[in-house]
Image (cartoon, rainbow, N blue to C red):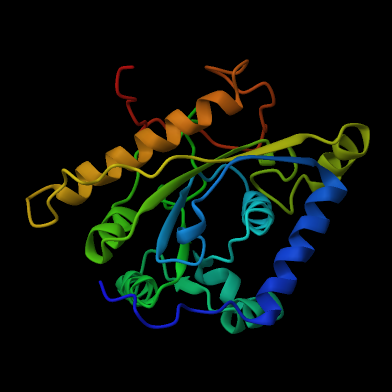
Length: 257
């Protein structure tokens, strides 16, 4: 991959939005960020792979990235791009629209591949949705993040986060008033951890099933990075959102050890 050119520069509007995200998180929660990204990777090319547990966790992740000096381009659902104000910000900030469930979904991966090849940092949710694993562990991932990394040769860093599910309910805006009352009584702790790069060196992109094997490694790394963030909640979360459905069809089996 040729990275001799100047890397992508985050526009001022996106850097300002990251600062705003930090302020928003500070209003409703306490943010703890651990781990780091090597300095030579912070401006890309890089793939950040995060678990997805809440409508609020993108805000927390953006704030955590700002703390670590990273301005990622986010792969986000097309619905955000159609919103009157947010959509304009997303487009001007260089984020990547994902048209899930349509024939145009492949365009997002093509755009992300081009962005990483140009030296960008891409933030992606390998699960492809807010996870519905009963224990809120990372569920079996889609192969997009792995294919992106394998196509570009870019490193993948798992970004595990926990606690954002206590800020906004799964069915937000439904239930937000009840959630706001909880936040006033107790500001939850949101923990974000930047893990070690995922070892994909033994995965040959041309081999059959390579994307699935790489995806499983990424989800394994996310699971391992998440475990220390919830040491007293190994099986069932302490806070259970009554509006969040449960789906066991995509449960990911952690590797032993």
